[in-house]
Image (cartoon, rainbow, N blue to C red; front, side):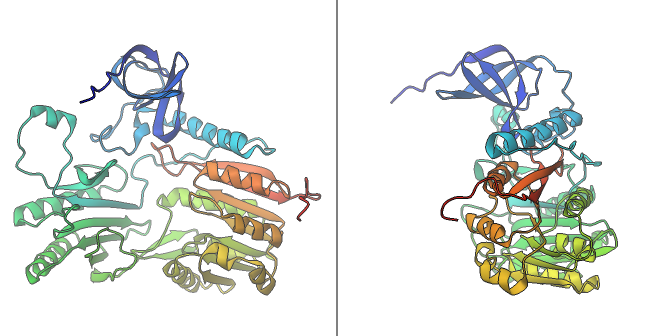
Length: 481
């Protein structure tokens, strides 16, 4: 049997910068070392976990000098959960790192002419800022290093909490999460206590069996609260136990205005194709933004930081510079939040989105708010947005695009260039793919404004809004064009 090579211990290493995926980095000889849960300025001893030709991955086994940029993590699950990795970094430093991330991506990948960036818009809330959380149930609880070291057999291995990265069937049992209003902690902990007391079976992800599968919680700025529990009911007894739990929750938590459940027998927890049953209250909640109301159902997409969503969309609307005469295309419109948000300042807004249910939500949201100058279409963007669509509906004056992390398909970019709007407002949750797309648009559009927005404090994620103006003269035109 081949002996495993012993990896080195690196002593007195200074962490120099923030890196990708919530890690920081140091340099040792000619190699970059990526390290989680440390901040620039820390002096640490590192145990190497992976060694490649050009880089290493390591963990800090001893912090010898604490950086002045360091903050004290506030969550008891920090370092194990895998989320909120930047709790150890002061918030103002997180914002600097995110601003730099946007700058690096747009300059190194995009390689286009850029204006001076606007300072990143930080989140007023850095705790309890989310309006949605999802937890899983498992009969295989993740054991922390301390628990493993005790080398004892634990009586309770059931858990409700977050999935552990790299261990799909393991759940870290969560006692308190700071990402959402504390009511969600009370509900989750009560469900665990009730389930253990009544002997309800927690899900086995490998065997695809067990009554309790997952739960989703949503709240809103109207004070409403939604809880959806996914069960797998294989018998009448399962059905009775599930309904008894729902009644218990209805009685104990009158704050829940939308109490829902799904009976899911699939091998995964996605429920877009499953029937959602309403046990109590409505099957939706409302969010508000300015004078608009948005109906949010269990399958609806809505930005998960309500307050910052308003800031993000306000930037997009400002960049669009609408006067009331414009035809606007809103690409990847979701439930039509941006489309409805800008509609009163436009002549007409056309929204396109892949998910049919989201488009139905978008239409409902227009009706609720008395908006009659929107049209919505469902289908794959690259299939719907084509030359025939442009010729039928007219060339847009402004295109607002908010694509998924993968960015825009080449066919979509080609159609945007054919449509030739005066302005493009590009909202992105991934500045790297945004930068790639800016380069593809660069011959015909110049970047005029860049506004980063922090939607997710204590994580490495950042949103970015870019305004592109049509060039009077293209930079260059390929022979085929």
